[in-house]
Image (cartoon, rainbow, N blue to C red; front, side, top):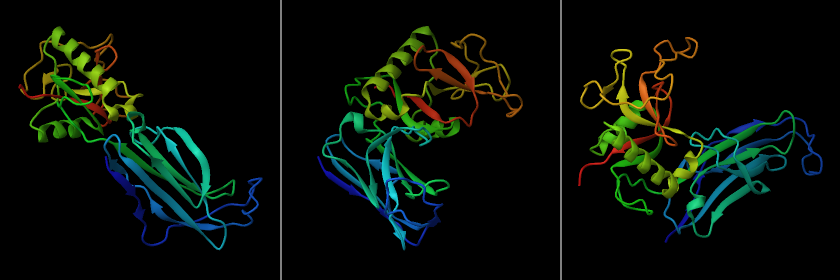
Length: 281
């Protein structure tokens, strides 16, 4: 166990002009104010279960009251979800503190800084991904020995494949129904056991290693370049949907549903977790 105290000292000034004071019950908000962010959380913070963690987020008002500061939990892997506000709203500084980091604490967070004035008002938000170390293919957290390793990073198809490649692997691709079931079982195990899965609870699709980018309708194994002889596309798929011509190139890369094991064709720019095929032991 270790103690982690983290903040980023912001150099320079980032000032914002707030609107008129309409917030009732906050008597110290008496005029328009500017504030600068003085301490902000890191975007990524790697910890171990059991660590003591303290992350500071702070801002200072110029010539008036300090802004309101608060934390929000479970904002999604891209920090775009609404999430759940944590604790009371502080003035000037808020500390996200864990006496002993537990599995349920591994998630995405956002520090929100806003003027105490209402309509219109300036708001700054800083996302932070609190995570444990990635452990592809390792028997940790009760996962056991697996053939397919889910990786909890939010990446495009190309970047997902690159990540696997750096580790000496490639994206997973089942070659028959038995392997598809094994893939599904391993994915379910990772989502149940691995702490980093918390932030992906609303993500149902993962990248696997098949594509028809070279010839529409002919999916190939991206590793061998050979046409696949097995697939498990769900009904009416693949359909190469262009989103009403918004993406005329269509959908050329295979995704895997973590609930049923069905496949779908997807846009390459989508970001999602993915599955690497573990080396033979």
